Length: 276
Image 1 (tube, rainbow, N blue to C red):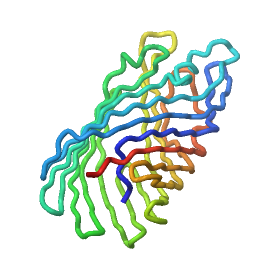
Image 2 (image 1 turned 180 degrees about the vertical axis):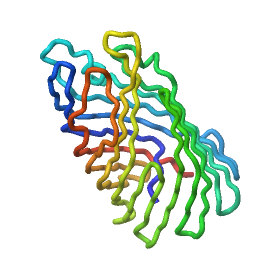
Image 3 (image 1 turned 45 degrees about the vertical axis):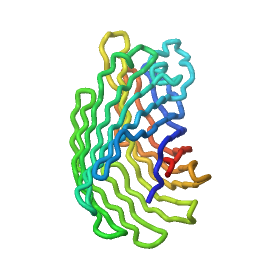
Image 4 (image 1 turned 120 degrees about the horizontal axis):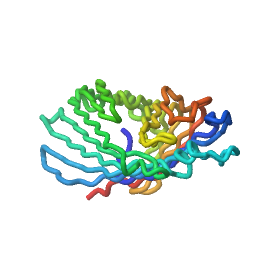
């Protein structure tokens, strides 16, 4: 199974994205984000556990200043103006010795610091519940439902979980609608994955020359190779290299997508929870 992560620091780079602006100018940029998250236990009983996970993300399209002098659409998305602050509340209820009910509630606020829209952004909510059953020491499955309330949108999706260690070193990890992965343990300290993982970003953005607001939203899938290395008993690192496929994009006024898919890379440093 994947290692537990108590505190996470992650940087992602996706170079070679191309956008066109209202003046007809094309810009090539790197999508870059920095993400921090930590988990803190609030309650741990024999049949019930509760954790909270505050998280923070800052993101940018690394763009240069427009030669036209009217670079408002660019500044909304560049210079680390995109910010997201959120909180996960996760609970695990033990039904019996081989089954559990897992729930997660997420609330976040995302916008741009450039025009003050971050403070005006409405809250987004996601709630998930799943029943998980362990059929054998090497196999477990589960099912449930996920609902997200975003900027004037409501999305409801089924949840499917399947984990199977078919040998001492290899296994399959499926957590839909989030990820599908094949895992191979090279050693007790080294794990390699072939993984496809979905990513959703939504930011509340002010429209050009008006007092109304719109959203910058994108749905991507990262597909590639992940390498996880345990450095010490508490510290580990995970590296990713592969292809990021953009499925959908909703851009602010004055910005048009030209090339939104391409290579992506990330480095994640994490601290494992201490064991007694």
